[in-house]
Image 1 (cartoon, rainbow, N blue to C red):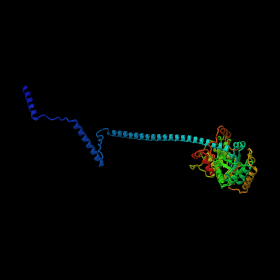
Image 2 (cartoon, rainbow, N blue to C red):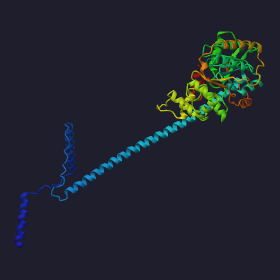
Image 3 (tube, rainbow, N blue to C red):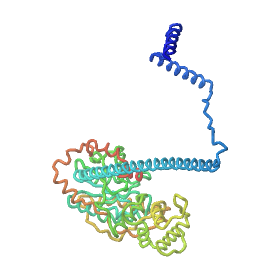
Image 4 (spheres, rainbow, N blue to C red):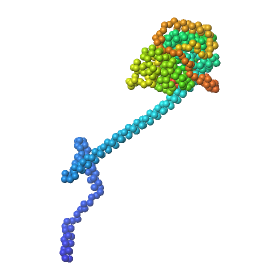
Length: 482
């Protein structure tokens, strides 16, 4: 045994010498990584060439479920149910995501709109306060500087365009006040003459037609020259409530002054705007709303104040059902609701959506068209109340001019305006808190220092032109007077 083992060892040793040492299969790492890099580059080039040729990557085919499986049908059905359920969940998640995105977008847009509306409301409120303060300061300076005050009265309702506080203050401070009836072309001449005669018992009163040829402007300028009573230079200011033709009258007087010779008169460049100190309430709110509707100043948007239906009911009480039936050629009706229904049906009144309006909407639409031709107007009372403001005027000379204008008005034919509705005038205009305004002015020294020679503060004219129009009266007067 020992012999055989030694023999095998010697043979193996002899073979190793004959064959030599074999090389190891172990690679260097540098060679290994180089081969992997070359493989990646080769696959990348092949993939790029396939993409250029439009070849799609071959996908491995699903071997499926073998037919020999006993429960193959149940397994396939279960797979289809799970697949459908997964698709439904995916669709549901997408729908929920879209709805959530839409709701978030709407909420964000709503918040932005509310923020914008809030900022716009604050800006308009601030602008309105600035405009009001500027107008009050302008009115203060006018009342203190002017020697003669021209108060414009709309001929459709001159009594409600008067201001008891202004008349009392003018009498107390020895200011010469002259009533100027504007928009007289909207009322029959005989009614204008009656108003002029009634107002002439309290103060000088003249009529002008600035919008219809400028009739009466020359006579008014002549009256102002006579009212100056020999003074070296008289300052004239034009003032009145909203929409009474202040700016148009001032422009016409300045044009007439430039064409003629009236160097003793100096017109202030800005008009004085009389505004109610507070919103009327109760019965006064009904008078105020009807007055605005008759003159075409009722806002289109619904604002706090008297309800349109209540205003129409008040209108029926003052005018009478018979007059309305004749004016609009309506059949008999019962109450304000019945009148609005008959009126809407007769004139085929529709809303913006083409539907028949409700009672409140019909009332608002009726009040908005009340100022259309033929216009409504108020009849003068037999006697007007108020202080005597003839002091300081040359009454005899002024009455001669007024008489000539009265004779001309009464000689004219009745125009189409005679078909308009008429009712008795009722009450003076709203309070403007003039006493508090002037007392506040007395507490401030040098209030006229900021006014230049033309009668307005430096830079103030540009402020009025920058306004929106809804808070300021400049835009309103331009639309109604020019």
